[in-house]
Length: 213
Image 1 (tube, rainbow, N blue to C red):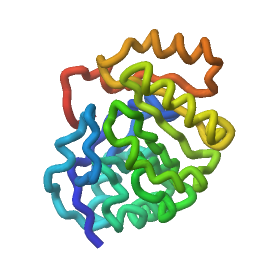
Image 2 (cartoon, rainbow, N blue to C red):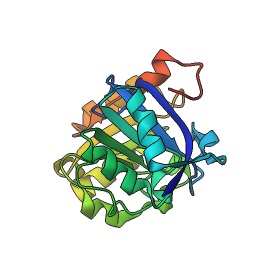
Image 3 (cartoon, rainbow, N blue to C red):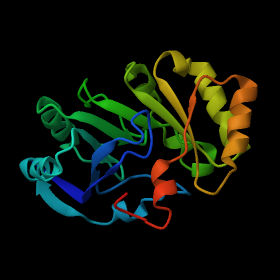
Image 4 (cartoon, rainbow, N blue to C red):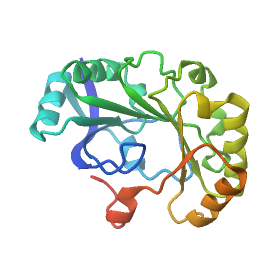
C-alpha cells in the first residue's frame, strides 16, 4: 500500500493535551476542504508516494515515541488507518488530526483522534460529518478553532447540545492573529465553559516558519 506524503518532520507538538512533547509528524497530502484560514494549504499539492514500511522507517529514525498523522486531511487516503495501526502495534502513541468531514470509523481504537468541528468563519461548517460524534471515546479530543464571537457562540452551542465535555476532551483555539486570545478566554470564564483553552505553541516558537513545525 502507498500513501501520498507531503512531509515528515520532528518538532514539538503544538496543540492538544500533548502540547509541548517531542513528536514526529507525518503530513499526508490532499484535502477536500477549503477553510478560509487554512495554514497548511501547501499540503494540497501532490506529494511523494511512499510505502508504509518506508514511512515507518523515516519515523523510526527520529527516535521519538509520539507520532501524529496529519494533513491536509489524512482520512482522504484509504491506507492511512493501516499506517496508524502499524505504528500503534510497534508501541508508538499515535495521534490523528482530522477535519471531522470524513468518518473516523476506520481509525484504530488505540489512536488518539483530535477532530476539528469547523466553525462558521472557516466556511466549511456544513461539511461536518456529524455521525462522528457517536464514535467519540474518552481518549479522543474535539477542537474548535475560533476567529470571533460568532464562532465562539457556535462552539458553545455544539458543546452543550451534544454534551461533548462528558464524551471527550474539548479544546478551544484561536485563528492566529484573527481574534484576541484573552478575549476568548474571558468568554469561556464568563460561561464556565467546560473546555481547555490553548494557544498553538508552534506559532509562538516559530512565527515565521510556514512548514516543518
